[in-house]
Image 1 (cartoon, rainbow over the protein chains, first blue to last red):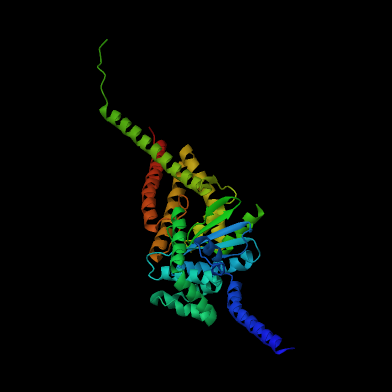
Image 2: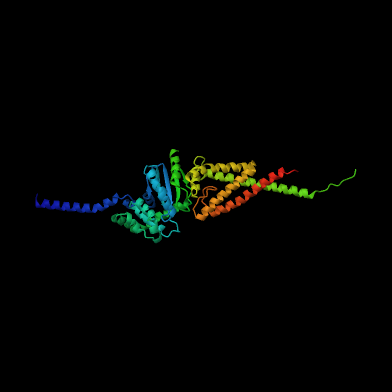
Length: 224
Length: 171
């Protein structure tokens, strides 16, 4: 091989390495499931990011919740987790989260804002669980970032922070959009649960939705 | 033929008029109370714009469960039968069948509802009353409504027993 061709090979290899170095982060970002990977964040995309299961599921459950509300935490701990295991992961239910921060809770709007940032980065499920599990820690203080840092790797936290700083207004617009949707459905408190099946929508009575009763109802719907 | 001028027995006329007013009030109270219970049953079977004859029980069970005072088996049993029990008692009362016992049963039922609401209010529970559909109300508001119904229930029950007693007395 001549010196000239060796020089060209070295330049080519160098350029290839540079291209690889530049493409690497972009590729890893594209692997993230949230809407941030598509380059733009809209309320509709964020709703999809805050949903679990298959859109083709026969039943859709829409939950209007406030991360600082104790009843919402209780609903998440005693109903949602089992619902995800038994009905969402098996393709029977599509579970949609809607933010409905109540004015009585001083940090719930902020929590919803951060959750949307995490959802846009593709980390909805672990962050939701952390916010409910550690509600007693961040609720009185409003220190939400440490809760996220507890469940996300430094690199993932960096992505969430980047989205939060660059798309903050879009995240707030998504929360506002959920609130508006709730108002149009006459949602007054949290958690408020709507079940959509076969073109019909039913609101479940507040306060008494236990997993055994919900399971009976879902099994009934799946048979009809 | 000696003419005898007819004497007006004003006291019997007044008594008769009082009887009629009392009977009318009793009938009105009976129909209103029975009607309210029929409506209570209807609102548990027909809501959100459609009949729920096959799945009403899931919704009502969730409402009862919000009181957090009964076992799941008791919640399910009560959710299945209570709307039909209310419908039966309300219909019997409107039709005037077994009024003493029916009105007594409704009064006892109202006392049970009020005890449950009082407990929920004292514990600060966010309940869904389930009394007339599923528009969640504060326990105190529902207690106010039930107090009015209890007064009506007591009045109808007392009226029913008094009517029965009057019938038994010799004329």
